[in-house]
Length: 130
Image 1 (cartoon, rainbow, N blue to C red):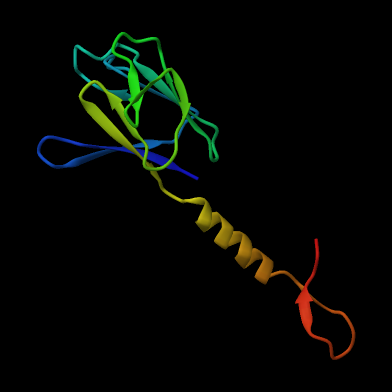
Image 2 (tube, helix red, strand yellow; image 1 turned 45 degrees about the vertical axis):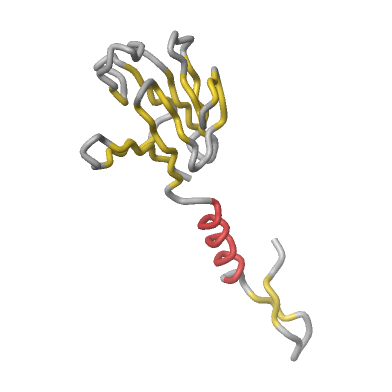
């Protein structure tokens, strides 16, 4: 599963950030992966940790302003698709790019492609058990 953070700019355009590494930094520091150039935002405000599969965790770095997820101040929390992350006046929406249903569909296709074995001559064919 892959994740993306979307934010909408004042002009109505959307800015997207793909979460593609184990740790994504967010803050005022220019070296942060997601740079928010506002004085209210800490140089290293928070990090988003991704396990490379399905788990996405946000961790605030003890900031004065704090980080909110769905309106609640958090220090550390598990993120899911549709969650809203607020860092000062900037809001990001967590987007899931390939939801588990797609992975389940791939698993179903793999099961359908499993070799068939005949239980007895003339009997109905069933997928082989693994």
